[in-house]
Amino acid sequence: MLRFPSLKTKLLTQLAVLAALCVLLSLLVIPIGNIHITLESLPITIAALPFGPLPAAAVALVSELLMQILSYGFTATTLLWLIPPVVRALIIGFAAVSFKRRGQFLEDKPLWCYASCIVAAIATTLLNTGVIWLDSVIYGYFSVAYVFGSALVRFAVGILAAAVTATLSIPLVKLLRAQRIA
Figure 1 (cartoon, rainbow, N blue to C red):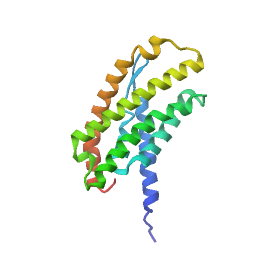
Figure 2: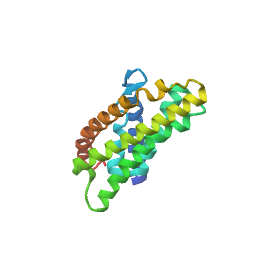
Figure 3: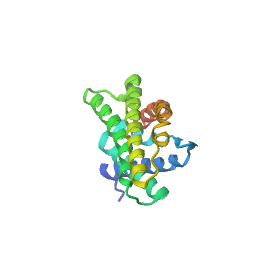
Figure 4: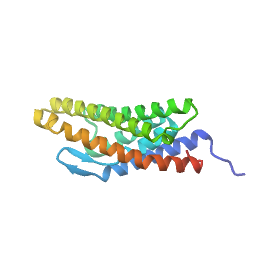
C-alpha cells in the first residue's frame, strides 16, 4: 500500500533541500577583498515567501551553521555568524505573513517584495558589520579600515544582491505555488 508523506515530512524535506541549495550557492562566490558577492540568500527568500519566518529561519540557521563549520570549523564566534542570515529570514518571513493574513501573497506585490528584501539586506549588512567588528576584536585583527572601510560598498552590494534575489524569487515562488510544491 502506497502511503503519502505527511505534511510535516514534506515541509522538512523542502526546507532541507533549500538549506542544501543555500550551502551550494555559497560556494559560487565572487570575492572582492573582504566583500563576497553571492546568491546564497536566494533559498532563504524562497523559504520565507511561502512558508513564513520560522521555517525560513531554520533554513538560514542550518545552512549558515554548515557553511561556518565547513569553512572555519567551530570557533568562538560561530554562533554570532548565524544571526545575520536568520534576521534576513525573519524580516522577509514576517512581511510574507503580514500579506498572507490579508489574503495576499508578498510575491504578488513586487514593490513590497523588493522593499522587504532590501530592508532585510540592510539589516543583514549592519549585523554582519557588527559581527566582523566583534570577531576582529576577539581574534586581534581589528583595524578601522578593515571593519568599516568597505561598509558602504558592502551595503551597496547587499542591496544589489537583494534586488537580484527578489527578481529571481518572485517567479520561482509563483511557479512553486502553481505546481503546489510550496
